[in-house]
Length: 593
Ligand code: ARG
Image (cartoon, rainbow, N blue to C red; front, side, top):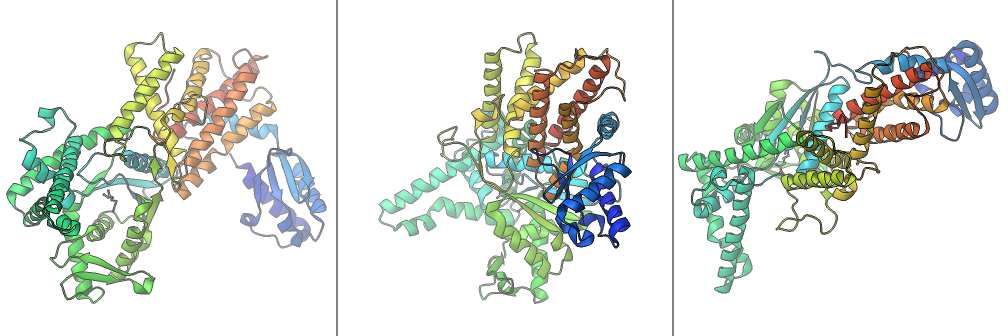
């Protein structure tokens, strides 16, 4: 169906052309939602049109409003308040919209085709020395949801992961395991592989600290001790051997990394996320180094006396950036140069999004500049989606080290809380164990995901586990519960034959249709700004509005069969949008709850 706000724009242009000559382009006409305190659905801002009408705002609004009511069946009434023309959309339009567009399963979404823009989106991107934590959860949820939103708005999307699988960090875990591991592995310990390797990373740190202390006790300065601790030297030696392809080091490295990948995979599956492709730093850092050396040859980069290679970014208002160390080894940036290049060569992406925390703003700023300097025009297509930090409220669920919140533990905790709450509410009495467990999982994960995604990605946030499962707030479980309620109504009304075109809508019903009318624009805006919170908060408003309606009106025993039929169509449409929107957030909705 034609969009009525679009029609209003065209009508304004028509009036101006007809009455006052030379009209503006339709895009210049400002049409907004009418504010709650006024009567109407859409509001035309009249002030910018006075230069055409040469009349007062009141008179201009009246001329426009009268013309629209007389000439368009979509507009049934109007009023002018100061410089604002409030238009009432005809009941027949909303009715047709409900019977038509809103009954389509794909309402609001745009199917991509072969010509659609290809967006590559990188998220998660862990290091292999420790398990995923709360920060990764935000990262993964954002990456997954943004991918879904981009897909739903007509893009081809490639989801990729980058694993920083080489470097001193993983050598530290390897060394500690070699020294104190006694050959243990995930199977013999029953530990998840990523946790096992993470424990050895912690162990390395303990070994290091006690060696430093010993050296200090022997009279060395702290600085000397920290630089001279033997285990650190051993870890560095291990990294050198890794780079030299030493078979023993390489075997240990791939074994321990495999443990980690298995662990990550379990966590990803539980979070409901996946990737089309995974890139490994150990594969791309060499390409990065080659590109840097080429840049050096071409005089774009320069070499210092010690042999290290640098980019001079002073012209761009930044400092100098190290790209290869004096011993020829590469740094974090080197690898990203190679990874980006490889991805562009492989896919020819139209844009590339990096979902990475805001502590790496500088890194991504430099990456784009360095690539541009090296002559890659596609450097302009890189975009860093820089999200804020996420913390727990003071004193809750901190792990031994005091700061890191483990992703797996947190998910366990969420499910346990969902179970406890449901058992207290006692609503699931009649369900079998299996179904109960599924609901606990859906609710626990829904609470976690929704609470994180309802916040603007750029903002820092506190994840409050207790608040997130509250059935009465702006939470995932509230929306899930509303959905289950909708499904229950639909099940009860299943045998009722629904007729379109019948019934007259009341204000509340029109309000709900008008709200759903906005859904496609919400998706487009969420896609343009890479902001799932717009979808989340829209769903909350819709669920709230529905609950209000449900509270005030009977659906299955409405006054007439026409009314029952209309309300069922309305409720089905709301259910579909909630299901679809929650799916874009990566959140499952239970059929019953
Ligand atoms: N592994 C890195 C870290 O944990 C993040 C990688 C982000 N992505 C990238 N292309 N640099 O800090």
